Each structure stands twice: as C-alpha cells, then as structure tokens.
Length: 324
Image 1 (cartoon, rainbow, N blue to C red):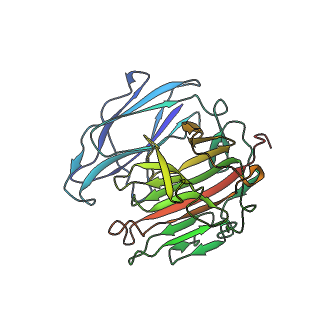
Image 2 (spheres, rainbow, N blue to C red; image 1 turned 45 degrees about the vertical axis):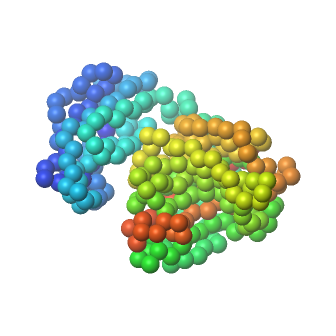
Image 3 (cartoon, one colour; image 1 turned 135 degrees about the vertical axis):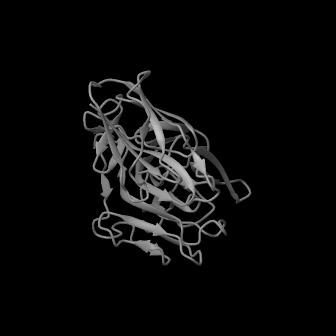
C-alpha cells in the first residue's frame, strides 16, 4: 500500500494535482482540501503497490500568485509511506510542475529510523537529546527567542526587534563537546533566512572550525558550510547546497566528521562529501565542536522581524564506532 499525504495553501480556489507511480497516472485530476498552515493533510491511499523501489511523481497543475504570501496557491507533499513506513521525503511545490520521488530503497537498506531521526544505516547514537525536559544538553542559551513550551521541541524564534537567540552545548574548551562522528539534527524551519543548526568551535574562538549543518538563503535554499581559519587569520568557507530539500518540512540533517573527510546527509541519503579543509578533533591535535541551534540576525537585517523560527525535535551524536 502506497500512501501520500497532501496539503495546500488555497487562494482563489484549491490546488489541483495528479499522482503517477512507475510511469502510470493513478486516477484523474485530484483537488487538495487540507490546509498546510493548519497542520492538516489529505491522505491518498493507493493499493497494490508493494515492497521494492518505485518512482512517484506529483504534478502541480494550477499555481496562482497574487503578489504576497497571503495570496499564493501552493501544493505540499507532506510525506510518502510504503506499507506504513515513512520514506523520509516531502516537498513544497510553489510553481506549476512535477516533483519526482524515489522510494522503497530505504527502511533498512540505506537508512535507519531511530526515534525522530532518519540516519544512514548502521549508526547507533551514543548521545540523544529529545528535548523532553526543556533545553537538555543545549543548556547554554541566549536571547529572548528560546522557546521550550512544547515538550519534545526546542524552538528558536526571531523577534520583532531582531535580537539574536540560540541554545547550544556549552563551548568550554578544546577537549569538550564532541569529536569525530555522526551529528544529526531533526528540525524544520520557517521564514527562510536566519535559522541555523551548526557545530561551533569548542574553544569558542572564531574564526575557527565552524561546520554549519543547516542554514537557509533568502530564497529558501537550504545549504551547509565548512568554515576554517585561513593563513592570514581570517575566515574562509565553502558551501554545499541541500538541493531538492524543503526546509519547511521536518528532515534529519546529518554531518559525518571523519579524519580528513566530511559527508552530508539528509534523511540518511548522502548529498555531498569533501576532503578539503577538514578540521581535526581534539584527539587528533585539533579541537572538538559544540552543537548549536539558533537565529542569526546580525547580517540579515530586514529578513526577520519575528516571522522566522527553527524547531528541533531531536539531536544525536554517534562516535566513530557505527554500531555502538
């Protein structure tokens, strides 16, 4: 059984779409009913689709745009499930067109479902923070935008006057924080530019080995960045895009930090890897890193004003012994 969850931003009528599985359109033109902003979704169940790899395509047919966020018709794929197992995919279709999904190759073959997280297969977390008791290990916090009012969630919001806010593992020295291993943040964000999930130098000295797991451009493009201290003592960096990822949906963003290599994953799927400018952890002559979540305002004037936020559902760290 294949199940697809759909929602919409309705304006001057509802979003219409088709669903195609393995090249065959299933049924006719469909009309969305559920409101995305209300957290609702329509459930489309398609029997006769069994285990194994499949290609699913959702085609948005009737985009409309009135010039503002409140006058915009959009279609959302809120999730795809195969025999009840989430395939870890979602998307926002903001213009007429088709979004393709490859499913049925996960669920034990390439990824592992651990709590709220979707990790590369074979990794067993050594540290898990589920935010059931407030900030948990992210106890070093600042700013007025830190919100722990919902059990199991840590939300960092922008404010009307654009004050920086954040929460992190305290950067208390080169040997503190965590070294080589797999770092995973299960989060979703709204408002585009400003929210971040990153690994900060545990000496709290910058420029230094900062690894940005998730940041967002003003057009909604999510990306990650490797920062390092250059020969003149300044900051240098190189970014990698999280292409095809909708940051407004819940995803697990993972960074595998190895000796001489960094690899990025979304929902257990490898998206990029590099061997350039990889920092060393404390055990190998460098410094460890401190996980952090927050809202960056200093270079985002005019982009925030209380509209932006990031919610974390879980963080985990697994050392370099994948099976624990």
